[in-house]
Structure formats: structure tokens, C-alpha cells
Image 1: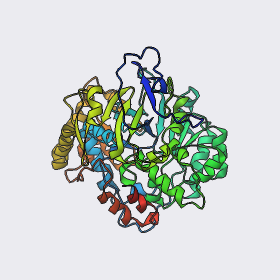
Image 2: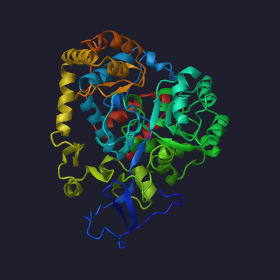
Image 3: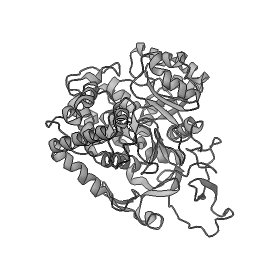
Image 4: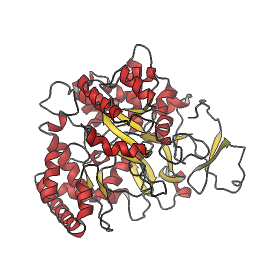
Length: 509
């Protein structure tokens, strides 16, 4: 994904002990110092790891959601959070899983991402800070071997200059700012972006998510500030029946990225979101993107969006970049079309920071001898959670115990929160505030909280702990499979808001 579009035939990627790419060369040009290095024949096309720049990880065990009483698409993100079934089907089950089994939930949703070739993902839940290199990179909290906090995130849209002041101050200090803005079709939502502009954060550090209501004038301002826009077409069509005017954004020269959003209204992983972008592109009177430009939405472009904030480049295979890469089986002559058409069975290997984390057992065995078995649909793969006691089976078992007895899990979670509050009130208060994260009193406690609308639950949390907010009647649905399957496609077909556009996703399976 170099800027000149070069594709290296019969090439090799050399990775240093520092987790960075040391060289990218033809296979017969071994760089100095690597003469005796282990050599792995990947057996496929090597791409930069995929970057999902918009997600909400805590909800990715849940199925696609529709509100039965809704017959017309929503027009604003301010609407669906108050739908009659939203709390019972989304907030409550996600919140209970995060409070009672935060570590297992995070491993589950990261696994779901990595089997689709994702190496970096945005959208950490509020709460405990996951360690670097737990499985994949968590963009919101990744420290890259430093003590720096590189990114600020605003999931719930700030509605005043005062609310944006802390973010504006962070941007002035060089921090990145990822902000939801203008999500929906209502033109009034433009004021959310205009407020960002008024406080001075429309800069190269800004990554604006959605932008469904933005116009050519807004995109011109975004280009002037060298800001980035993250496009989530599946979620936009699922909820609003329309998506951002990315043709106008591209015409204005805005840097475009892609994100799969969350499971209740999104794709399994960003590999499938690329297919939604491909379908949208084919549906236009004339294609807006080349296949190479589509692939850049999940590689080089988000890498550029983060390049001024993170200390190392990513999203390209080049010397000095983070050694995050994937190997994909080759089925198409064109390398870009090959990735767009690929599905989970085509992912042969995922390497993050030079470390093999997931892939074919034959490739993982010499690279990650501590990896354990995982079934991905009908496939046998290996995965390395960094702890040999953790397996995919143990993750599912822990989550399934909560699903089978949510009342007991809620009681345990309430006790945990009470202990945290008693041990360190300041850490607990940081945990439950919006965008709050906390190192929880030096213990092994790992609690995750929602980052999406749940006002009634947050009120109860501050007052009584999770038991009051997740009553024994909470129902946790069966856990979603790792691969995109026909049950999911059937659910997609049943939603009329997208006018059949998303139904064509079946053709990639």
C-alpha cells in the first residue's frame, strides 16, 4: 500500500526484534543481519493488517438488532437509543457481560475481529485499560511501549463548547481525537461538526466518525484541516437507510477510512465492511473508488490518520512501520480485488508487532508454539492469547456460564463494584464517568462498561452498582459465531431500510 501503488511480486517482509518492519525486499535480496533468521513461506499474499477505525467492542457478542415498532428509518443517532427494545436487547446484556466477565468478553470480541484480518481496532469499552498486545491493538488505549496516552475519544456527541474543552486542550498538545459527528440523515446534525470546527479541533488529529449529514462545504472544511472521515456504510444503511456522501468527500480530497461499527447494526469485521463499500461502489452510476482505493480505506488511509499521533507508521509494508500484517490466500489475479473478495477462510496468518497471533496451524506452529486450537466455522486454526491457560474454549465457557445464570452473575458483579468503591473511591468514580478508564486498585479486576447510550443504567450504576441496573430478568442471547453465516444473511434480508443493497453480501460468501 505504498503511495506509488507498487506491488512486489515474490517479496519478503523482514521483522526485527523491536516489532517493526526492518525491510521489504524481493525474496532473493536478503538484508544484512537476516541471513540466519527463521524464514516462513507464507503461501499467500502479504498485506498490511486491517485497521478498523470505528467500533464499539463491548457489544460485539450480540446479534443484529431491529426495533419491531419502527417502520421507517431513523434520521438521527439521538433516536434509536430510546427505542422500546434497546435497553433489554443491547444495553443490559452487554453491560452484564462486561461487569461480570470483562476479560473474557474482550477476548471474545477481539477474536471475532482477528479472524477477519483486523490487527488494530478502535472502540474500547469504558472501564479497565486492556494491556498492550493482549491480542490485537486497541487504538483508544494503545501505548506502543511508552507511557503516553495518544488518543481521546468522544462516543456520545458533545453539545457545547464547554463539553469539548478537554478534547480541544488535548488536541493542542498533539493528542488524537476520535469523535462521532453528524450520524444520521437529518441536516440539523451538521451543527455537531460545526461545533468541532468552532472549538478548533478540525485538524490533522481529528478522526470524525459517520458524517452522514455533512455536505460538500463541510468536507471542504475537513480537507482544509487535513482531518479524516470514517465511513460505516452497513450501519448507516441498517439504521438510517442512507450513508455519508463519500463521493463528495472524496471529491473534496478528504482522507477516507472505514469501520465496521458494532454488532447490533454492523458487520462481523472490517473485512466484510470492505464488501459493503464495494457493493455501494458498484451501485453508483459510475464507480467512485478503484479497488486499490477501497483497500486503502482499511490500511494506508487509517494508518495516515494515526501517523501524526502514534510514534510509528502503520497500514503499509515499509521499513520502520509497525510489523502488523496478514497473509491472505490468493484467488484473484488482482491483489486488491483479492482482499475485497476474501472471507474468513482465506486468512492464513495474522501477525501483530512481529508476533504471530492467529492463523493456519502449519504456519503458527513454528512462530507461536504456545498457541492453542480454535475452530472458525469448519476451519481448524491456532490462536495465541499470550497465556497458555487461556483458550477459545475457556473464553466461551466463562461467557456461557453468565448467559445461563444472569441473576447470579449480576450479584457477583454488584459485589465486585462494591469492593472497588470501598478500596479506591477515586478509581471507581473514574471508572463510571463518561469516557472513564481506570487502573483498578492494582488488582486483577477487569470491568468493562458501555460507551453507547444507556442513561438509565449509568444512573443506577452510580447509585447501587450493576445489580440494580441489570436485574435478574436480563436475557443474554446466544453468542454469535465468528464467521459470517446464512443466519446473519437472513436477518439482513429482513430489514427493509437498506432497500436490498446489503442483501447482495451473500454473493461474497
